[in-house]
Length: 178
Image (spheres, rainbow, N blue to C red):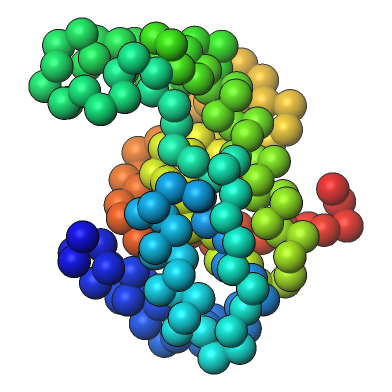
């Protein structure tokens, strides 16, 4: 919609003001329409005209039977609250009814982020809030996250922070350590 396109243009302008727009080597997005259109707008604003690609691994969480239910739907709300509570406690085996569990979301997202990082030194990735949040939790916990890792200050900060449309997060990827 028009609000989303305005947010995408504002994100591109923010990247320009930060001096990033001239440095972008690639723009990668989810293959879903909202993220894809946002990425197209950002890529079009880049003076270097970086390559543009889409990756289904960057899609939002698959909510299964809850997909498309209004936030007021009682059954959906209870299931979402229970699933997110499990994930927040570190139990990523809990799945949305007919949908993904946390471990699958994180594995899919981290794999897609690693693949995107291979496209250059400065890569803009446009994805969805839930995927971004849980991949950030995984990064903050470390690869081998243990029972106490959900209480780490960085994890708690990620869990408390809202992920709003067209927000920017910076991830520094060490190509040599992977």
